[in-house]
Image 1 (tube, one colour):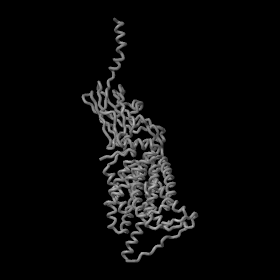
Image 2 (cartoon, chains in turn brown, blue):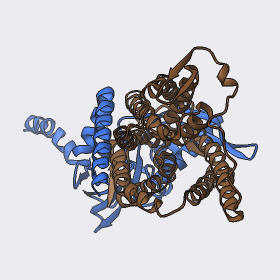
Image 3 (tube, chains in turn yellow, purple):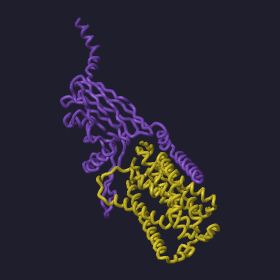
Image 4 (cartoon, chains in turn cyan, orange):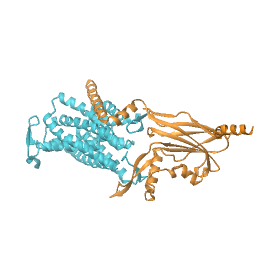
Length: 306
Length: 241
């Protein structure tokens, strides 16, 4: 069955789209991640214009993160003060990101920038996780005790000015640090169509030193508002939000995510992380190969000026 | 008596000129509706001529667009977009049908004057410096199916009745189009007809693109409301299981 996407102005196989959404939903449930970094490149692979893929993904991320925030809030795992500080940066970052997106689209470089950003991010994260999880697995096999990590390390950022107390996270840090994290997350959200959770979460644990329990809910708070901001701005300024596309992705996620999280309970964490790492590296390689292999056609139509 | 004949002749002349029209055409539909299930469509065009002729059918758009073409170039092993050229007056669609190859139907000057064939599109700039980009633009449009790679076949029955099937791909843009039909004989156009064709979006998809294009802010707000509600509902459904 073909489905005509009104904003992308193309017809896609509805079944293929649903399978794509289900798969991404399954992985997001399995690994406890948003899944935007899987969906955006996958949509581009099937021929959705990169701009529309990123814009529509913002709406899908909103749906996923609202659901996550709702659950974490009920358990009291949200540091609102921290979340809103990050959000101040996040809103500025996403607004800047949408402007940058519009500019790159106008000069015809948006597809290259999106692909390169994904290659860098996927390969870095994938390699780090692969090293970390294989170390853990090896250590368990050799029955060595895990080296204890400090609660949080004091980097040079500890000397930043305007320190604020965050009682819930038991932190006393410069207000600029969470703002900067939010800013970075916001820019990535707007350009890559991802929530940025799996970049924010490690940054909040290792850089800010937040308690792990609060990190998921607090990053979800930031992502909800950033994704909402990106959705509005992309719809308003770049006209790149396809509601049909977003709804298909959301539907896939609703069905796929519970299946994935059910399986995740049965698999040990380090194996899960190893699996995710392989997936990330695999996608990075696929994107890189596409950029390195001589294309069949060197003249291509650009989204610019449309 | 002579006078009467002269008056009659003057009165009848327009009718006679009318009667000389040798081409009549029609289409199965004059409107293509892009609904949610749209995946391209075929349109039957048929007509009659009074003598054995060649028929050329050209479908083109009344609205033209600007299109940037980028050229990929290898930089440090990676293919990046390096050069770019912007073309204007680009027809979103150019598809055509013919009884024979266009070069057999009419000489170059006739094809050029009437813009028959992809070689004679009215795309600006015409500067030969952009010839590679221009050819790249046409190839790209052909890959999508918006420009004909090969003309569709116009087939005749009894040298009088002809028909052809015009194909429109899924990527067809909404807008006003025109179907020009030319009757040629001995390399000369002896008659022509034009039929309007309207392509529009219908149904929910049409409403979505209307709001997205005209009320982007409201559309964005609606999109976040839909996404947030869907997210919350999925959370509840998930918890129950």
